[in-house]
Length: 224
Image 1: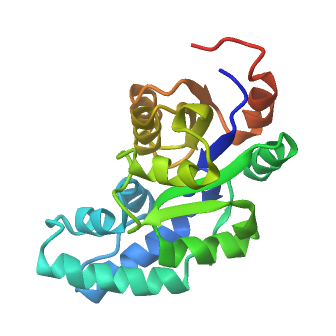
Image 2: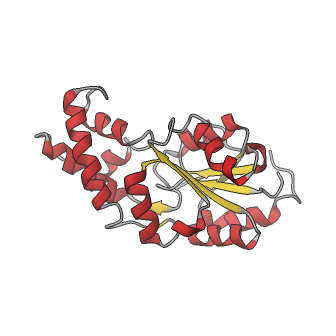
């Protein structure tokens, strides 16, 4: 492990706790097609592979079903307008971004969240300008495909092998590893710990509160 030239962060469950807003958008979509609303925990279990998959899972229907398409349109319109109504920082997230900037490490974002909701959320958190590159859902293949990681670091002039990918889901770890990057899994987000560890991250943090120390240690310690 060496000091990275760039760090690619995930957004939902990594930098921001967006559970309530995602659940509200999902339930708006469900009720718009006559379905019953679900609990926040039920909705969270569907998160990770993009909004259309989320809506399809909540409905129990295929992604290409006509009802899914109607509900997804409702979800997208609602979420774009309410992406940050209840969003809060994940523990240690602000400090992690500051640590990267202090170390001169370039920042990029790769999320499966639609751009129409990603940008308002970043604006609400006041961190839009911190990211030199933002790759969002709809820009290309979703994680765990490595394309988003390559797209995030390419404009920075950084090869994936010189970057870290930080996220709370197996999709983040899978994308990072497939791209050849060093991966950091963060517990306490949307994914279950067992599934996150099974994805094979290079390092696991209890929260981003430990990220600054990990960054400082890079280049001086060998990690598995």
